[in-house]
Amino acid sequence: MAKSGTKFQSNSKIINWIEYRLPIFSFLHNSLGAGYATPKNLNYWWNFGSLAGLALIIMVVTGIVLAMNYTPHVDHAFNSVERIMRDVNFGWLLRYIHMNGGSLFFIVVYIHIFRGLYFGSYKNPRELLWIIGILILLAMMATAFIGYVLPWGQMSYWGATVITSLFSAIPVIGDDIVTLLWGGFTVDNPTLNRFFSLHYLLPFVIIGLVFMHVWALHIHGSNNPTGVEVKSPKEESIPFHPYYTVKDFFGVGVTLVIFSVFVFFAPNYFGEADNYIMADPLATPAHIVPEWYFLPFYAILRAFTVDFIGIPAKLLGVAAMFGSILILALLPWLDRSKVRSAKYRPIYKQFYWIFVFDCLLLGYVGGHPPEGLLVTMGQIGTAYYFIHILVLVPLIGIFETPEPLPDSIAVKAGDKPSTAEQ
Image (cartoon, rainbow, N blue to C red):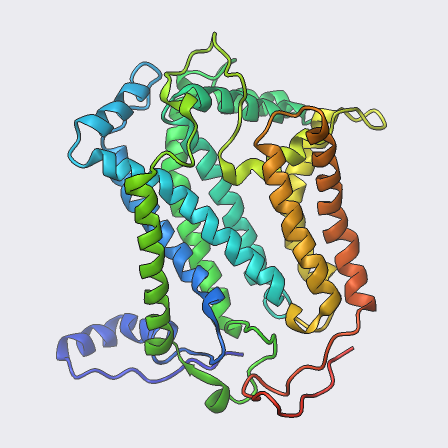
């Protein structure tokens, strides 16, 4: 368990007065400052947690300001977005930051998740930490989807129509869910009002989940590249501040430079041109696609083209799409290996990179019309996705012989390691 209990002291009478009545400064000191001990061998892959926090702050702040100038009505939504871009002071900048901030958020979160998969950050005793992270991902996806509808462009309207209609595949209650989402019998003004309300609410739900995620992280501390728990805090740990705060600020600087390039020089790189056309229920776009961060799951949805044992293909696709996310929460129990880090698991490491390639392949397939060879590629990619998690990960954990683990994270190169747990 992480040892984070350094006594907080201040020379300021005001701070001491507040601290005695509300110990907020000692909380920050022991959670984010010198009082929080962290493994000394964390690398830059551990920066993406703080970068996700930065992206969340960017999205919330810009979203609140944009909401002040947005009109959630089908007759005015598209024009209000155009007004933000043209007439509101720095409205174009706020919207481009918000648009590209969504992509930034998903990029850093996806990297954060794949880092956890590689280094086994979901294993005992961090199972709940991992599950809360998956809940954050689900909340992000819901927020991003309903946010994509708000500009009320062609892709917004038809994306909302297609995705919400999927719930009709759920037996018995599916049609009622769709009617509840629509607020009627088609995507219209009640739908837009519901989505605007939820899009404003869900980020604060995400903030609550992030608080729980950080709380769970501080109970047992961060995992590290070796996957070996800290045994001697004095030798193997360093204070979070200033060592990792400086490291995080460097990562923030690099990220903001790259982010600024997209905001100022390629603001529509991740967008769809059809969404700059006002929504028209009578004109269907040639190819309806979601945002890029949904493409792998969209490919899984479309992989089912025929009914199976009386189960409609549409229902199978919807179940597989949601299941592809939910089964990630089972990884702490599916992975039977007692060694965390793929650095000492040669077989798992190879299949891990195959899995990464498979996810990229699904993203490629999801971004193109389901025609010819792409349909088969999507079906193979979907099959491997589930086989990897449900079959290969458990079997590799049982039969793989890991490489020897170091005795501690403080062991230097050349020191004699211990035998890995079998």
